[in-house]
View 1: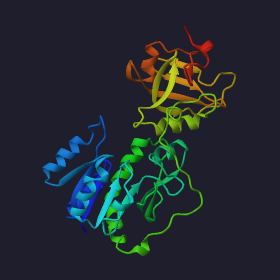
View 2: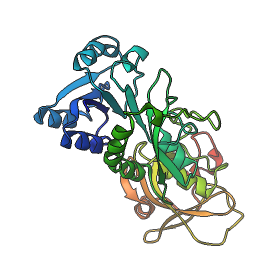
View 3: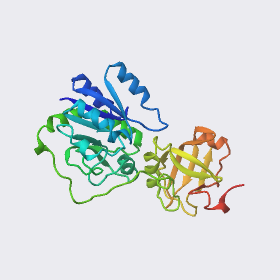
View 4: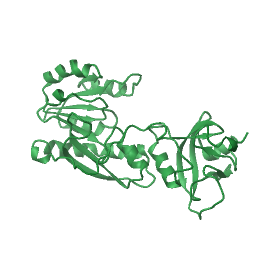
Length: 319
């Protein structure tokens, strides 16, 4: 099958490898992102393999890309990691249309970053969904759905890598199924939810309202794509990259966000809603990416506070 891949590397590397090894790959397209050169390495490497490449942006997708795709006359276009909406007339050019790889279950996890929301919400399972693209976001008929467990403590980066590795075998299955339109099924009309790209508020801890479990989920969802979850210490933003739950009886009489233990060897422990404790393992700030224990050496003390934002609890900032 004559296939074109539109993808973000390294996420779609398993797709590229399968198509290349089975001589089904006609060309590879990259999204042209202003100020981002992450695809340059992959683009240069692929060109060394003598595959034709094409860079798509919001302007040329309506003009040059359309003509280029007509001339290539592919049977299928596979999409994995692409943020530009493809015009409906372009979707009709390949014999079997465009198939999109979505790291979430549809229709209950639509949107540009489904894996973030799955982990943030504490889901125990997600899915890789391969669906036909149409004029709307994530609404096309489903070709296949592969359930994927989310392991406790798994970060977005870990889950993303695990799922990316599975795409080679799923590509093989998708190419076998797409030749028969009967294998495509409409999405359910129930449980539909669309999640936007996370905002700054979505990636900031609310010590007053979030439980220890919810904070741990959020930290994992923000690692590494968002550089960790944001909180404030002494009025300055820092990023918490890794935490772990402390197995202890709940304690009371403290304030959410309060540092209840700070030891240069044992590390940094913070009080959460309902008396649960989290150990702060890794923090990123102007001082560097360091362990909680090393931040104790920098002056974080028991009785200090992490804050939800700059304005909250000014009276609790230790001067």
